[in-house]
Length: 115
Image (cartoon, rainbow, N blue to C red; front, side, top):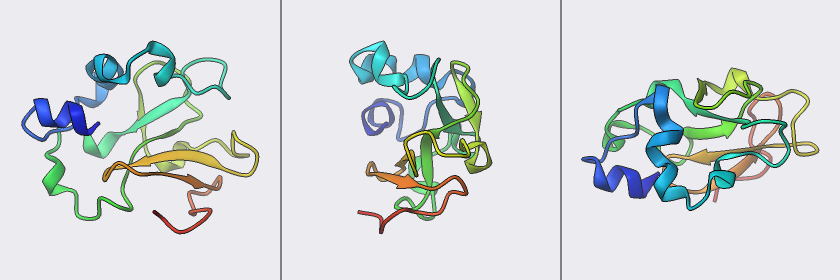
């Protein structure tokens, strides 16, 4: 996400086409597919579509990509769309705006401290 933003004036991709927008930065199409889901399985935060990165108040706790129960390509939503029960045992995977990843339960509660 940081590579895309660096090329696009520090903005996130448009929410409706986020997967196509970051495709070339991901390396392979498989990188944008959750191995625990039958289809794509990742969602993009609706609130961040085309937003400037510097306007995110808490980058270390704001999610940008997350396991989603919406399995369509370019799924958008928010943490209410996390699979419950979680997709990966007790946890769902999330990517935060600052670039670190984490694990959260089905309600979005962090499994362990961020970072």
